[in-house]
Image: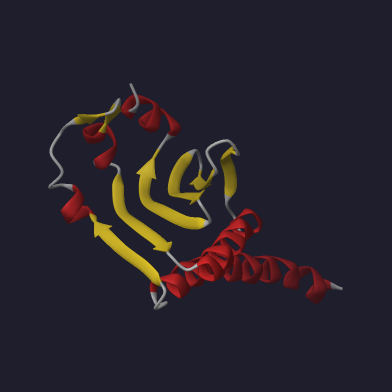
Amino acid sequence: MIHEKKKHPVLYFLICVTFCFAANDLFEKYAGKDEVISFTVPKSMLMLIPDIDANGLNVKALKDHIDTVEIYTSQSQSVSTEMKNDFKSLINSGYSQMLQDNKNNITIWVKEKEEVITEFVAVTETQGIVGVVRILGQFTAEDIQQSIK
């Protein structure tokens, strides 16, 4: 009995680690596909963005909190369908859904640690083509509110 109780924390840890790696594998899967256009914007490139207000978005207020931006899209209908289904699985892997807008076909998931958003994933679909934007960093909901006018 004593040994069985000690296995549970280890089992939970292994399950959590598996979910974390599964999410990263998902992004790596699409970064390496021929039919997928993907690119990464590192923090050093983000710092080159001028301090501007663009369509009510104060870029400066948010860019200091972002480490990396990754963008994925595909013109292939079959790959877009696969991407859409795969990214829906994020709900079950440590992400929480922040927004579901069926009118504009956008879903946003976040991964948080103690009220700090560490990952922001937006999936959008237009005419059967799926686009995914992943933002890694350290920001709060208040940081996002301050960047929107």
